[in-house]
Length: 297
Image (cartoon, rainbow, N blue to C red; front, side, top):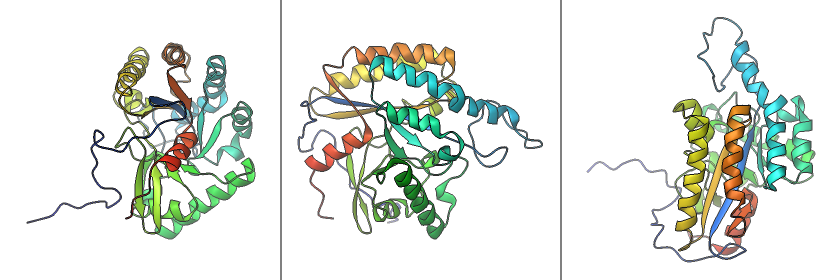
């Protein structure tokens, strides 16, 4: 019988049949905001598109639209997060430190956690050789360590792109968790060739790129998605601890008409702060590392 190809990173586990553990405030729902702060090459490489690029001339429109996120959207969103007293996990392309480092400074000063997000979203690490990918991860780690005064612990691959070696290289590079896999509502230990690395849930549904850029969801409907997902997971979390991430990009939801609806959705969540753990990806990972036994293999 022909066997299906397997990734070998984790074994199947029903969420209804797992050992219990608790968040710092007890069982319930951990909620984090993952804000992607990204920088792109001008008119080459990958990038989100507002309109299809012809490829025949410099792509001014799409580059400028994405750059709005760093020049305007990220700042408006920072004000929103501060007004609601919401923690932020800032997923940073390290090319941002060359282009607009004051944005990272402002978020850091506001208490945001800094998470590695590759060098630029103009490239995918899944297209690299193993040595090229290892060198990129090492350079990103070095730059973040120099800028932030501590080595990064968490990673999100640009475009959620992985090679066959990515978890191994991240583990060997000193990372304790990553966000690339959207297969669960709880943290999951993943196998690597040198040990285990933790997968922290990162959403691909409550995420403005698939929802808005791909499915063309309206700003109002995207906010409703956030609220409905939160309300349902809050009910489910009475039985076991769960993680809800909200994945955002400043050039998308930083647009004023979308920000208005995002404000409504996040305000709804903030009203329940006494019943949930408003947190960051790093705090979720550390709690899981402290509570969840590492598998034997």
